[in-house]
Image (tube, rainbow, N blue to C red; front, side, top):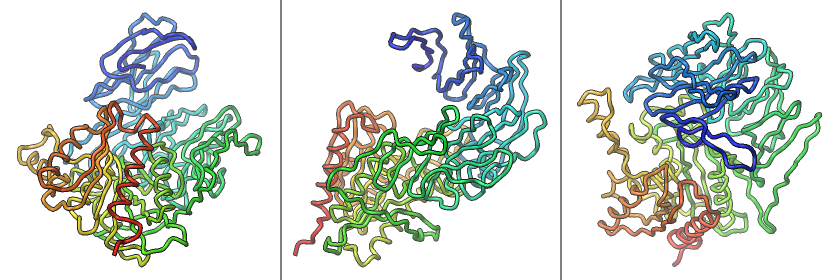
Length: 532
């Protein structure tokens, strides 16, 4: 896939374009007999599904009956005669949570061309479609359709019989936990999945009978597992640990194999992050991981709040499965080894804690309510006897860069220095369609008040700005604008640009340089030992 082009080629040969279509092809799904390919095509305002015939590559693709929403997550029936998919509609900005019907499961007959609605998500929790990237629908051989749904307020895998659909899907896993990935066993008798059952900060691999039964843990207690796959009867999963980055673990005939063993740098000792809870400014329970310096390091210590990006992310007391946050975890470990107390905060709008947490009122452009959690994290550090209250900083990237800038703009009295990687600083957006002039003005005012630059007059603390100038996720101009405004007010800043670099840096040396600049910046602004 390349934009709207479908390319075909043999291994080791240059592929050639066999078809093009407006928009972007975002996913491919083979039919069971490998004669047809279901293409998911994103055209911005809507998304389509088309069938491409691999035996007649010159023929135009056949589009499924289209609608004004986003058709996605396509899956073939085992006999290849039908195709199921999700049809989701994007709510208006002012739509009330839990109100309205915004997605359904559709079934298409590839022979007759007929399509019908199998099930529509009811009002209440889960009325808007949400699933982690890569999670698909599955059509089982006994006629069950498996799909993710937040109907209980938590993302769980649920099932519907295709022939006789019921009003309420049967959810297959325990409540008050969320699923990250799943597969069926080769004989389709067991569901294999990753979820945070029993501990929202601990993701493990589980197995349970597909019909009924209790989950049984497959991964070790000290591992974090968020992805798995099957190869015949064998199960492979990507695991991480306190001192081990992501690595494959294979379960074969009840035996555990490590094809690749991570190596720890000689002489480096990892601290065990502590799971901590603290109350946000408005009373919400917030989770975080606390990294403490070696016991022999003299205190009181400088301290740092780390804020992840996304914002639909979750930091863990271990290396993160995502490369970006695996690097951040390693940096937090290194900062702790140097003598800093580091608190990684899982603020509202993140994942892992249910739909109400991820979609909390007033988040982001609607009021930046997640900053209440970040501010509370700083107060939590300041209350500790091992922290120097006048030497607390903050760092993060992307949405974490946004929250870093917001912290410095609103509370330079608490956060005395910050490192802002490719953050958003002006949250205002073009006018939103479907809103009255009064509603548009209210949204514009909210976006402005949620922007760091709206509080630039209160900003006093020095900041480190780092950005690649080929960033496709956050406009490079966001950092340029902030630097201009800081310079106009004589607010000290240090800035570094990576020419040609993307959002998640592609070059290892750029990661190293960025982290070395960050370390030097904090060593200078909130030194390990207070000068007298």
